[in-house]
Image 1 (cartoon, rainbow, N blue to C red):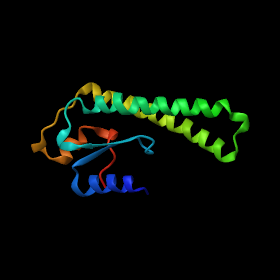
Image 2 (cartoon, helix red, strand yellow):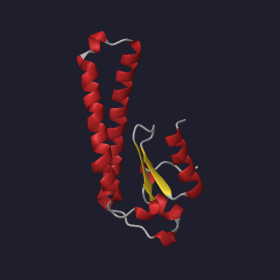
Image 3 (cartoon, rainbow, N blue to C red):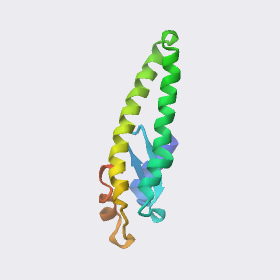
Image 4 (cartoon, rainbow, N blue to C red):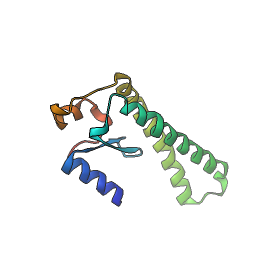
Length: 127
């Protein structure tokens, strides 16, 4: 695991102050500070981070496909992996869009568990 992943895991498990918006296989992840979240946080994550990430993956895929005949085995595997990441991110986009449209506002007094549940499977599971 990377240091970034370790931090995210520790922050979400130990302190529950940072919430990890994450696709199922972690092709996309975005860490947010719970006390800074508002009704528009999910929409901001979708438009400012997820959509550009999908565009970047598509661009990378296009560049690799342009040289598909010259790719070695490792690069072909990476190209396949990028295709899977694009698919996963698009599926996550659909789920996040539903949450973003709800403009979920929450009360900090309700506690982490109650508020966390409002975002469903768009957040990484608390261990």
